Structure formats: structure tokens, C-alpha cells
Length: 144
Image 1 (cartoon, rainbow, N blue to C red):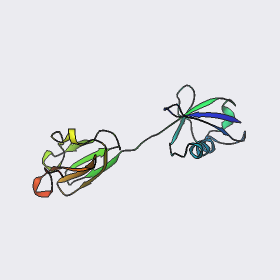
Image 2: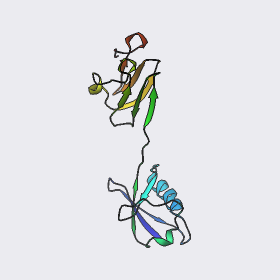
Image 3: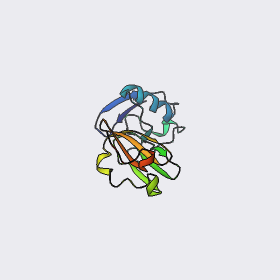
Image 4: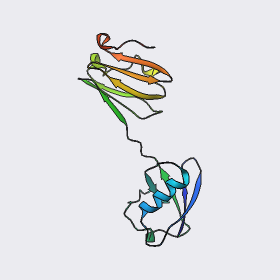
């Protein structure tokens, strides 16, 4: 059975699997074809496919869309949390004096690749710089 797999960017790969294969096998072949680790396949109507589903339920020559499901990374002080996905917005919540309020550095939290925490402050690597927020006595309110 031959299936076309599309990425949202428009890139396409054709994979061939046996009739008794599962969606998980199609996913593995698509990941090999693209050299990337996306984690979900969607049917033509946009429904997420169960990895254990047999491909015989799909139409040979049909198309699927491969999508990334990025789980956020989380860092925590004793009283606040920061969550982010690379290339997306950093969200903070919790006690403002422990890093739960990052509004005064939000404009600097661009292209964040890593966040670390002390007891009451956060430090982020953003666009090659270090940005911190939270309690000054614990390393907050500075940037390098």
C-alpha cells in the first residue's frame, strides 16, 4: 500500500507499507523519509489516527498529514512556574516575587532555548542572551 505523507510546510514523501501494517509503521517510515520526529498522523479530514489502527482502513494512494505535538518544557522555583516550547511564548504563573510575573522581561524572552530556576528566580537563554526575573537576591532582575 502506498501513502503520501505531507508536512504542514508542503513537503511530501511517499511511503509503502504492507496491507497488514499499522499506522505506527507508517509513522516510522514517514519519520525516516523526512529525517524528523513528528509524532502524529492526521487523516485527510483532519482526524488524529490511532497508531494501533491497521492501515487497511486507509485508502491506498491516499494522503495523510504529519504534525508535531510539542510538549512544553517546565521549570519551577519554590513558588512559581515557567512553561515554554522552543520558538514560542514563555508563560509564567505563581508568586510574582518568585518569578511568577515575567511581564517586564517578556519582550526579551524571544527564541528561548532553555530556562533554569533557583529557589525564587528564573534564568532563560533567549536569542543568545541570558534574561533573569524573580527575586533579585536569588539571581532575578538582571540580564547579560
